[in-house]
Length: 40
Image 1: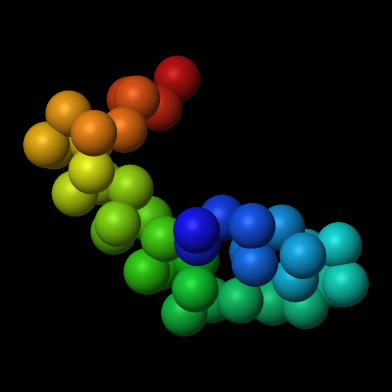
Image 2 (image 1 turned 135 degrees about the vertical axis):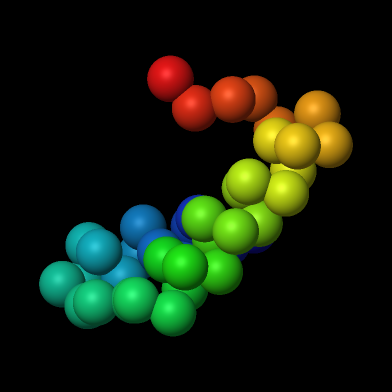
């Protein structure tokens, strides 16, 4: 849910520092709970 708006923003050439941070934290929490695959 968070990565799609980031991709739209990047295509539009917009910076999203807050969304980048929030998404990274959400992914880390999901990985800790085993709900998201670990990053390669």
